[in-house]
Length: 265
Image (cartoon, rainbow, N blue to C red):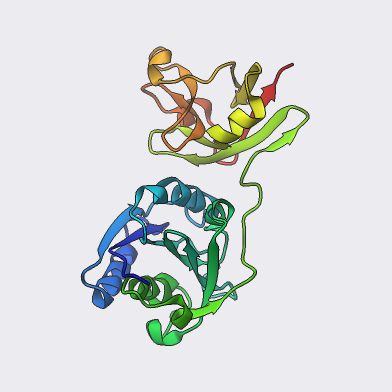
């Protein structure tokens, strides 16, 4: 395999404690020439679905053959497996706990590898920091062109999260808020593609947090200041937002709250 120039990081470590910095030090000690990009270290603690959503939103914008490292790992030290996912264009490294679910669903050509070769990990391996001892060194070795055949063995069965897409029940799309961004926008698991396929040209009503919408706007300029709006954000997902305000604070909606779309006759 060809060497990779870019390694990205997605974690729930936050800024305190230096954990992300330690991982970068491990990577650069193995491959000083690679470029490390911090996507975010502010995934909600232990939130595998949020990590999966962020990963699928950002990875298409990176060069082919990038290595995407995800450490949101509530099962660290347990029997959950450390894995590599090989797609047609990129590499993904992290725990086998569902954080790569969108990668599985959107890539027909993929191979999953269980990391088993301890020679390419740090020693000893901590039971609480696999990001440092397993995932960071493995990502670095992948970026140098080390084959996954050397790093582990193929894995046939791997963890996938449930309910990634909305459910459709009698002309009602049952969805939920999967992410609340820095601006307080409520990001749902309804993609533009899914919405178009399910709703088409029919009239509809969107219900969330006591608000009802009968249209999806194109821009924030379609409503007045501090008004609530439904629109597709840059990630392609249906969002509920407040122009020049914080929708989460206004509606008191939390992650996991229901978003429903009623398709009318």
